Image (cartoon, rainbow, N blue to C red; front, side, top):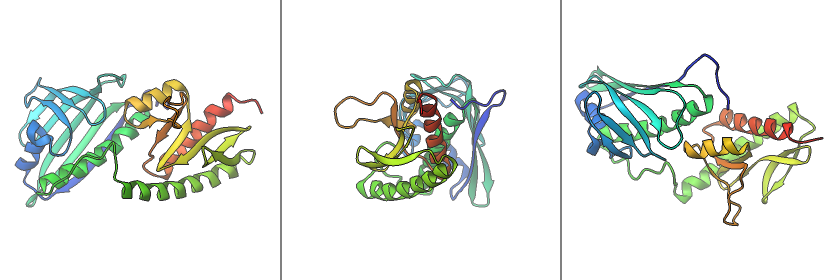
Length: 262
């Protein structure tokens, strides 16, 4: 786990929404309205109230600040796979002409990969919040599943990103090789594969505990080659950009290289 000793990491996002502050606050604090843009099972709009969301697995917390229509904040943790630190989500709303500026912060992370997972998640749900507040229909939440055309586009983009990452990594580690893993382009070191792409996903080899963590937080999915039993040390990922892809691939290479004899 890539932990940052002695320092907490945060997600910070700002967006302008063409809707009144009261309307945006309602979408952030009324369970029926929250459900339009984010899966929610409970939201008690008062200090000390309980909150429960279900974007991937179940996230729970307690309201710690409630000042309509300016501010709402609550603690956040995963019920089944705790973050190991107190994290807090905070929405601050400011009037901006006829619209509203929304500042989201999610603080308290101790691991970079957990921060990155939540950054992508809040970016996704922030777009859905904006659509709902401005009178649109966010549509079904496809954070876990995607239509075929989106998946096809992602496959092409990820293959290009993986190719770029591969070239850079092979320049730095000329002893590594390209190869085919499950009929897909992959990378290996000392004869052992550590990364490949398939159907819009990056698949990397990592410690089993790390794989479990990525799956539990929604950042990854099990890698099942079609035999009905997931590969224990492999995980399917959808990195947000080339930097995230490179980080996962390098992490996988480091793991494999440490357990492989040249």
